[in-house]
Image (cartoon, rainbow, N blue to C red):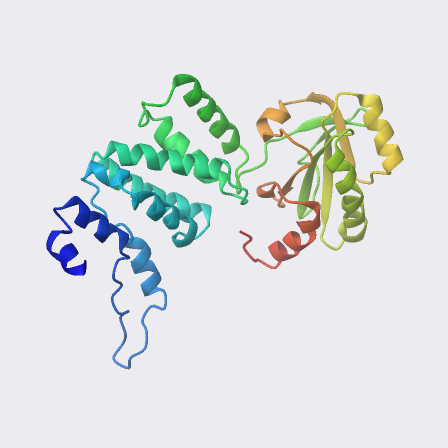
Length: 307
């Protein structure tokens, strides 16, 4: 088989498939004159940068072989570091290879695969990959096969998510508190602001709220944070009653009167939903559970990057 690949791997479809199924050979890492490694990451970066060397992008049939999909999935699941910046970088490199070769069948499947995978990803920050792919490929007319209604929905969703990606400043939100005073999520001179979207009728909220109260009372001073709790319900009486009954100790706002359509802007479709903002009101975490808040803030204060 190796001999066949050597002789026909670049001209025969069967040979191309067998060649593509093999991992690229990684050379010995460079060393200095004393035999010490010059770059301990050489083998990994060589592998990731040459991962697609054995794929003939000029052959339209390659995307229909039983090898292409597993290789694509391995690339995203086991090869690229699961960080949004790296995922975006290597996605652009891969898709550009397909566009340069005018391999539209391969491009069509791959751009769909990436958009679908990272729109649904449960990992914090991966929505940035979906936003990038939609705004830089779908929205720019590079996916003309997409139905107009579907395309419009994808672009609208990507534009909404783009407002609340990690690292971006949280959209400014003004809402009434229980004393009918407008309070903003930018009002707190704290290291962290936790935006807590909840509802009086939400079953998950009823389970999580006591945990959040315990966390707040124990750590609000030592971790230097404030909670800005937004009630999603429109029944003001029910909201105020719940605050008293549950003895909610943080800043409570509600009543649906706001400077923005906060459900749409923040993309809130389920409750509870948490955003964590830093001192500069940049989004540093979202969709985190109450149970993980303490460790996240402690790690962030220590300068540890959270994936």
